[in-house]
Every structure is written in structure tokens, then in C-alpha cells.
Length: 325
Image 1 (cartoon, rainbow, N blue to C red):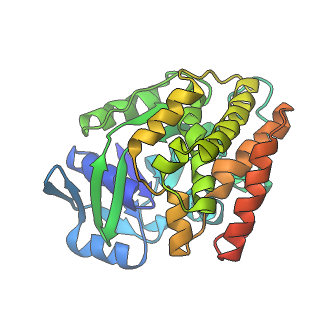
Image 2: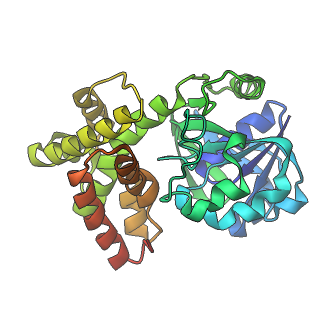
């Protein structure tokens, strides 16, 4: 099995080390100091008080690596459209594209009866991603581990080992089952679910509210989920998101208050959007919120609170130079 990780950051590096050390032929596309460190020292994973090292093929050019069986992208959604053309050399006739990303995926409507023609403009502007990587190649992947990259070529694992997989059409295909088996052998939990959008929404449900609210208020999860006024705003956003999802056929396995309670248990955690704002990096607004509002419009569901918060967080991000939308 040949697997390429496009974007060997914290999650991508975690995947690469574990799969390479389990015998998978792994390569990574990286750049700059990260690429230099991987080439010199290998990818280093700090986990459970020890360090694992994997020597993998690494390049800043996909053409050096050639066609793969699976290509993982662990990029943030806004980083995907500008680089899809660079991925072309990685794809053979049967290569699968594993979207290990947060938020609404570009292939969202693929496999839904009568809706294959739809694209999600927020994450697939002008259909650019779908044209370069047809949605039929996609395998959904919901990422649960918490990792970070404190220095080039190094990944620190903090918690979690589950990557939930699923075909957009709900099938248990040979390719998704083979990938699941390989990931399990590498030490991950990698269940295959027939309703991958349900899984995507459970994670997105919290992200669509807590991420933008944290960027606007600079508060951590424990405050956002427990302070009455802020919790009320988050809950209203989540209920609107739930209405959108259910209108599109999604089923939620937990209720909104349990989901909020789960966020509160994480404690004084800064969301990724707040971290990006503080560090002056592009913020993942479109995949986590704009796309949800777009899906609401497609489903005929009003999203007034989501629309309001979207306008505010976009303005905040533009003022900080962290958003160009």
C-alpha cells in the first residue's frame, strides 16, 4: 500500500509516523524548515513518554513521489483550493483521496441522491477542487486526535487516536475497508461508518459555534460553554446548525446540551480559530461556518444567528489580516 500525506503537520505527521512504522509505504509532501528537518532527521513523534522516528520519502513536489493508492490531505480547508493542481502527479486511475479535515467537505453532496451536481462554494470556489479531484475519489475522515508540532519535523501527541472513515455514498467499499485495516494495524481506531456526514456534523456542531465565538471574545471553551450569556449564543447557533443538518438528512446521536457539556469538559482550551487569530494565520471560517450558512440556504433553513456571527467574525479576521473572503 502506497500512502502520501499532503501536509505533514501535526495530524499528518502523526499519521505518517505510525503508518510508516507499521510497514506502509508512506511519503509526505512538505516544505521549508519542516521538509528540511524530515529529510535530515526523519519524522519524530513524541507519544506516551517516548519518541518514535520514521524515515519517509519527503518532497515539496508531488511529481517526485508519483501515483499513490491513498492521498491524505490534512490541510486546513482554505489551503486546499490553491494546491489541488499540484497534487495531480499523486493520482493514478484508482487513487483515493482521504479528506482528514475539519468542517464541511468539498464533496458534501456527492453520493446524495439527486444532488451530485451541487458544490459547496465556501470550500470549493468555482468547483475548482471538484474539477481537479473528482468527488468520486473522496473518502471522508473525521479527525479526533489532539496533536501539535512544536518544531519542524516533530509532532507531539496529546490525546486521542480515532480517525472515523466513510464513503460519501455510504458503501463499505473494498478501498475504505483496506484503509481501515491498515490504520488499525498502525495503532489507530479507524471505524468505517455508513453515515459519515452524521459523524462530520457531530464534530462540526461544536466547531461552528465555539470557534468563531472564541475569536470574537478571546474566551476559552470552559467559559464559552458555561457562562450563561455566551452559552446561550453558542446553543442558538448549534440549534440552527442542527436544523440545517437534519433538513439534509443528518441524524444526531446526542442532544445539544450534552454536546455543549462535552465542550465544557475540555476545559480552558483555546480553539484553533482563536490560536490562528493570535498568531496572525489564516482563519478557517469558511469550512466551519460559511459552509454551514450556505448549506442552510440550499436546504431552505433560516440561520439568523449563524449569519450574524459569520459577519462579525469575518470582519474581525479581515481587520487582523487573517481572512480574504
